[in-house]
Image (cartoon, rainbow, N blue to C red; front, side):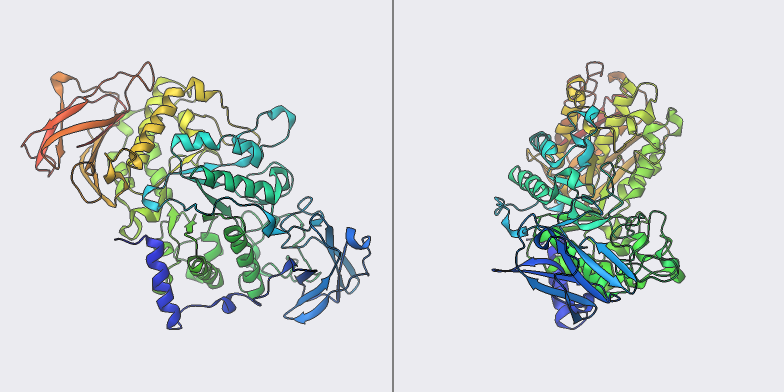
Length: 627
């Protein structure tokens, strides 16, 4: 039996820890006692970090908002606490922090429920939710197909009402995702952010769930519903920067230096990022705060994975590669230690870095000095593939670049990369959806449909963990925006394109036991014809019928007819069946239905393969074959 990569790393880390080689929880945190509001059998404990405070009180609906009625007591390490009664779910409160002449009313940094990003904290009992997912386990990386979702725009039934989509409205479409074949859902950040419209990458409260989406119980209900239909949930977390506005964490206890943000942030140039102030990873209390929020998502919300935003800016001041003078050692240590602690949890969790620097060290084990991530977003794949889909000139399509996209694997491990042709960043920030880039005047045109689905076939047969962006499967066009919901009518007008994605996903996960090789590590790009713009590759896990899979992709507007068939090498003799032909008219009425349903391998060596066959090839299409 071959253990999953995360399990191998877990056992390695147990061994290393026994030898004293790894940071412990105490090395990461200032105290093992959780901060925030904790309930026990008869009372409630408030605990907050405010090292420069003169006094700290808690005021709320339970004491008539009296700022002097309920004092907290210092307990060392800059922490203050009080054990009190009269607190129940729904009680609103704030900390009242005095620092010299300053009196500051602050939202609890670890509140899981808030009125708004800078409003009152709301007492919440995290263990009261009635989970029904005890038997759920998430899919292994080799069968994983990720779908990236923005809750606010995924399913907004009435955009005109200026009310964003919610966890409840998103849940209405979870059966749709399950029928499509999705088994992992990557959700853009849901930590509380200012206002109601946002991508989520400006977090203000890192333990609270966005109130406009439905708050903590709304998110738990959503995760529970996903699990009930066999879908795991990966959550985006943002700790390379925090919100740039003057929210509750900013100068939390009244202290700061150099005009910076106080105890939670760097007080020098390291605080500056392109998006907002950077947290101070050098303070053990800040690392403890980050870890407490991470652990909360994984244990209290039953999240199955994390996608860490912009890790390059956690490990380097400017997000640079090979720039040791500006590396942030404490940021790297934060990532390593968090991944070790994630692997020590009893559940199977996938930890993914969005680094986009193609640095294989991110996914090496921490015992070898690596970052300990299980996988990372692979920006090179989209950068190499999309130009050959989007350009209007066949001569400009670069098969060598496509080959690089297929074969460049970090640490020679296919599943250490997440690959995509669309993501929230790749279809915004000055760019657009693939169909809109192919044909800006008519994103639903024949050319847009043919070449965008050719890209989908490449994505879902390449080694790696494939990821789709919401609506990609029904030809959503334009630019991603937080106030532009998906057009679900396209599931009808583009029903054939949706069917093609469904069929490709079934092959990717080997649903019919005919394409096991697509879930394997191995690839041999054995045919690269840049003159005719044809590429072919062999995928396999162990080899043999139902495993060896051949993909032939024609990137040209040329049909290879019966009288001029195209020869491609094959690894085995016998009959090869076409499991998917993206040119079928069942996918679109104006497709050509060109291509074989099966071929017989001949004993003619070709492309360094022992056998070969002649193929009719449709334009801008892919054939996927196995035995």
